[in-house]
Image (tube, rainbow, N blue to C red):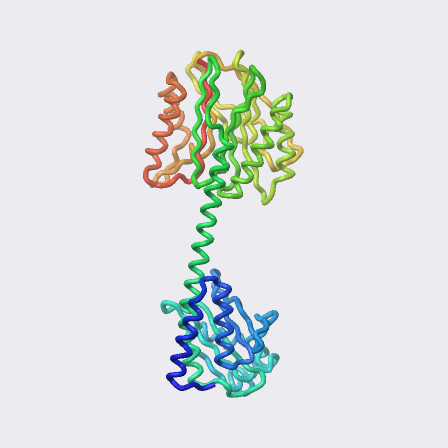
Length: 416
């Protein structure tokens, strides 16, 4: 097909206006392909774009009747496509069967290709894709003028495609941000809004997600008039999958420990339910303690979680709680042991997730257990709110201007 220069300019202007009439990526790709097949009178047309991994993927494939071509990746000459991409310039053959470098290729012979024209889609000097048209019926249907016309169309098409792609990215990002904001609000409603106020006790908690949503959580669960359940947990992974797993795990644990039974039995029951729902190898480490507020007895299960610290005022020493079982979500029939300690006047416990000790500064140093223990010792006579504020300030100062690499959660319970 050959047009006069003025006619080609008119065609290019009209097509450019058509391309810019939509920001829907699929619409733009279809418009581009239909216009190209129409103006070149090609039997078939294909539009391929470079994916993130570098390979070309067919996005649209049309016949002259505008019907979609099935299995389009097997319907083109890969020799021409690869050469267009490598050299980033148009390739024209009037008769592929007779062309020395194409005639012996299996795709050319198998598809019985005759006239073939491939033009690069270029954006800022980079080849982002290929427009490919052919005919299996006629030889010589494309001319040098068709190359110029198709290159002009491809130039407008590349801009239109990139605008539509960026618009799609912006829309998806905005939708994701809204979804994450809603998820964060839902999560915040799952985290206790306040700490218990019980005679003879002080409680404090700090929850800081590294991202908009978190895999960490803590909970205070009233069991009866004299007993309080205390939970801290850390879901493997981060982001939305961890947040969803966190919400599910929290509900299961709450339901399991609310049934009158020993902590070890309750956590074993929760583990079986979490294993049934666990996917993609996700699991949750957990510390659960059942506190008798009158006697100060704390019966606990530590399912693979960071061992909490116990400060005993009478001895003026810190000790770590033992781990008493595996993390939840790995082995459905795992058994859990329980241990017991007694908190006396002036004693307190610190529960924390690894975001505390593994907080990293600009030199990639870890906050670490030694620094944590030193701070706790310096504030061992302080109120829990003062301990929390001091720890929060210490970690914030240590991290500096960089964002936290992991969720940070801690709970403090002190007998006064």
